[in-house]
Image (cartoon, rainbow, N blue to C red):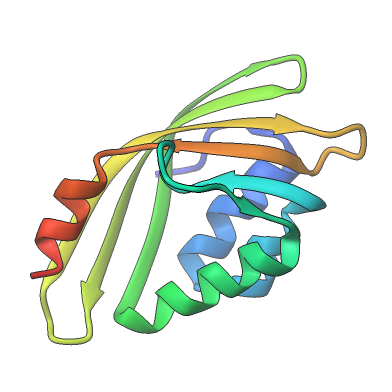
Length: 128
C-alpha cells in the first residue's frame, strides 16, 4: 500500500516511524513542537523532548514496524490522518493499534502540534 498524499513533514513522521529513526521522526516537528501522545496525556514539548520520548519507546520493540497512514485529509495547514500501528515486543508479543492523528503545521511546513487519538489502554493491555 502506498502512502496517501500528505505534506512533507507528515510523510516524514510516518516514514521515520516505519524505519525506527527517532531523529528523523523528531525532526518532522518544529523546534518548539508539541506532541500529545495520546491526547489526554501530558504533552511532550520541544523537538529534543519528542526525540527523547521516541528514543525511549523504540527499544521496547523488536521490531517496531511503525505507523501506516490509511487516509489523509488536508485543510490549509491542518492534516488529519487515520493510521494503524504494528510492533512486536522484545518478548515476541505482537501489538496492533490504530488511531487518528491531527497535525497543525507551522509556516515552514514542520509539525507545530500533533494530537494522537487512540485507546492507550488497549495498546498497553497488549504489552502484557
